[in-house]
Amino acid sequence: MSKAIKKTGKPAAKKEDKAVTIEGKKLQLTNLQKLYWEEEKITKGDVIDYYSKIYRYIIPYLKDRPQSMKRNPNGIKDEGFFQKDMRGEAPEWADTIELYSESANKHIDYFLCNNKASLIYMANLGCIEINPWNSRTKSLDNPDYIIMDIDPSEKNSFDDVIEVAKAVKTVLDKAGAAAFLKTSGASGMHVYVPLGAKYDYDHARAFAELVAHLTVELLPNLTTTERSLSKRPKNKLYVDYLQNRKGQTLASAYSLRPRPGATVSTPLEWKELKKGLHPSKFTIQTIFKRLDAKGDIFKPVLGKGVDMRKCLKNLGA
Amino acid sequence: MRSIWTGSICFGLVNIPVKLYSAVEASELNLDMLDKKDHSHIKFKRVNESTGKEVAWANIVKAYDLNGKYVILGEEDFAKASPEKTKNIDIFQFVKLQEIDSVYFETPYYLEPDKSGTRAYALLREALRKSGMAGLGNFVLRNREHLVILKAKDNAIILNTIRFEEEIRDASNLKLPAKTSAKPNEIKMALSLIENMTATFDIKAYKDNYTAELMKLIKAKARGKTVKQPVMKVVHRQSDDLMSQLKASLSKKQKKAS
Image 1 (cartoon, one colour):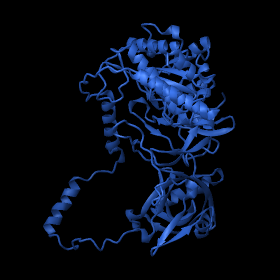
Image 2 (cartoon, one colour):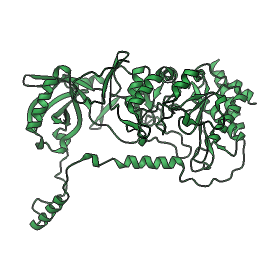
Image 3 (tube, rainbow over the protein chains, first blue to last red):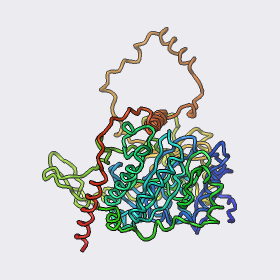
Image 4 (cartoon, chains in turn cyan, purple):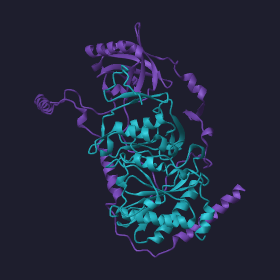
């Protein structure tokens, strides 16, 4: 990439700033030397480089999906904040969609990450993590997939997470439903079931709830579907089916996470799910070698959806 | 940053093309409203007060209550009342910055020069800085006319919108003590206290702790620090109910589709 620093004459331009043109779209990258991971010495510039390189793999999972922007302009040392409304802020060349937000009680402009410049723009805003909707603008009420979120408590080991992921797979195998696995990039794992935007969120959630309960029946001592933290047993792993709501988001495949080690939410093959596997192995440093070898193994998630009625039949309904 | 307005600073024969950027952003947390019982999202509806029925956006009009009678206003009415759209920030005089009380200051914006205006911009900025003066003028942003001042800050010229006189409330209704009600030696004491506590103003020393504290609390709650022992429950195969409900709902859906 030839991105020479142009002398723009702007009084605000600093040494750490850089004007770039991506596919004809101009943007100003700022504070590139800022340390986002102090211990790992990873800068904001590294995050932008990462998204520039991962673009061709991540874009199918972002295109046409409203973004809940999680911004970490201070790197991983604080929680950052969510920004959904981009009214008056998004660049002219970027796509947005006006949607009614119940939480904000008004219409807001969601950002759509539909091209490379938009992804780099987000990274430049401090989006370490990318959180897209489960549905696309053409079918906002119908998610493309179900997500089973396996969310361990502090007392669970990653081997527990592996055991639960296997149980979820057992349930989905019995249902005859295709299932795809990725690390969350944090402490848990996500299992995706393709739906092909054939069902609305209510049906997706109901199916996910059923899978969650069947999983808990397989592993009653290890798992729970109890959402309320105060009622949830401390040592139990939460099988979260409530990610399947309109507007609910979690980190997409190939999203970096603002966590120690600069981990990446990484798709895995089911055969890789063995004791000793650990999500800390999948990071900004290791992902590309893996992609070179395996390619994007998550792609079927966006493909043909399962037939829920057949699945229910297989489960004995 | 994306500019929200483009135009020119105009005074005398000078014309400096500039872009306007917002200089501030909010630092509050985005909280959602949920039902206490099942954590469902709370939804808002615009309902007709008489019928209780929901009203679509397209069927909602704006109105002003004029002595008990509603005057309905359409988009064309708002357009008529709007000031003439110009692309200029017209400076009509320069004033001493200290003369403007903080009560008048509204929203700050950054001005960035267009390439062709860089030299004139720098010149105006240095002149404002050296003289301690601010340019007073007006411009039109989003159909509203704004009174503004321009002043130098670091390498930038800041445009600060200024409130009009009628936006400031009168303090004469408050019971405030007269100027001469303090004794001279008391004043002396108060002055020495101020002197002792005087330091250079450094905004970096102050953080919005509330948001940070709230976030800390949210994190602790999410980790389940206040978890109580669970109560034993009678086992019930919830999955059976779920399965039959989903099956019923799917067949309904199919009937509708066919």
